[in-house]
Image 1: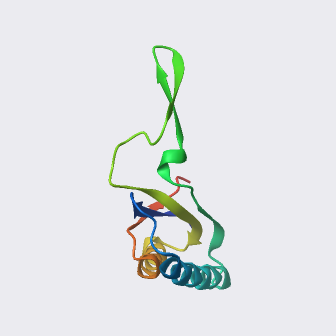
Image 2 (image 1 turned 135 degrees about the vertical axis):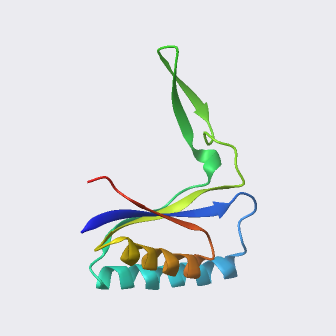
Image 3 (image 1 turned 45 degrees about the horizontal axis):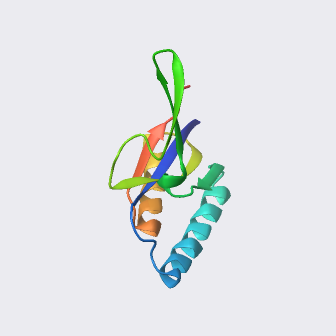
Length: 113
């Protein structure tokens, strides 16, 4: 079984209203349980907004520290799942389900063996 990273990208800007988020979080809890029940669960996590990140960059032999995301963009990594799947098709199906539940783009990427 290969491990896959399912990365959920969310738009920058205002946080959706609590009633909307409550429904999404309930649906994510159901999806998480389905992943566990299928034996595909490894780990999941939600992240604080991109403006809470710190970037470390090597420049002229020194490591520089800067606030915020490395790249400017209209969306950022908001959370992720690490799953095991028999093949890419199985991992993509979990990614499709994550996208349906969250309404957000999901990137599916295998870990190197």
